[in-house]
Amino acid sequence: MLMLFAHSSDSADPYKRPSFSISEKIGRFVWQIAWLFLCRWTPKPFHTWRCFVLKLFGAKIGKSNFVYPNCKIWAPWLLETEDVVTIGPGVEIYNPGGVFLGDHSILSQDAYLCGATHDFNTIDFTYVKKKIVLERYVWICAKAVVLPGVHCGEGSVLGAGSITSKNLMQWSVYAGNPARYVKERRNFL
Image: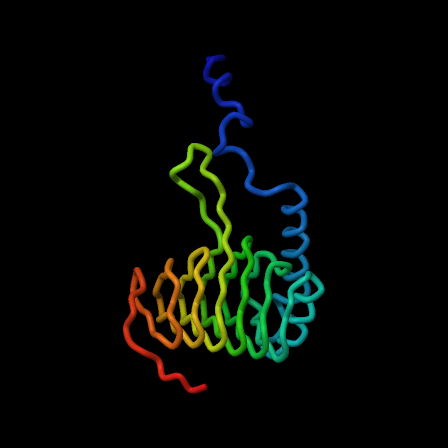
């Protein structure tokens, strides 16, 4: 019985080690409490107020952004948006590697940006975080998923319920799981 415990030390088992420091955990906890009490209950049209709160926590927010009260932003200090960006209802932004949202980009209902994963090919299950970039006029449709390190070119569209782990070309439409090129989107610029 003692031998079982001798081999299962928390410091020796990489699966038991935390991926984040205590200060990171405290920062996220404070952020979650602030969002809950200052934003989560606010009426939908209070976008300016929610952007103000995000800025208080270090987000770089452009003009005329639309951030809905029931979205989840993991680390606002790692979020950067340009002008006229929409973070829709139920959107989740898991951004330990950072997220950039260009002018007029849209994250529709329940879209998910996942900026981290684990390297399952290493014994220590290494935590890997990568930045996600959406250029201007990108549309991530309802319930679509963008995985770590993806760069969505200007005007690209990821269809509803689609999942991408690959970069999206400019002014192109993608759909499916995994997302595949479907057709060209008209460049209106």
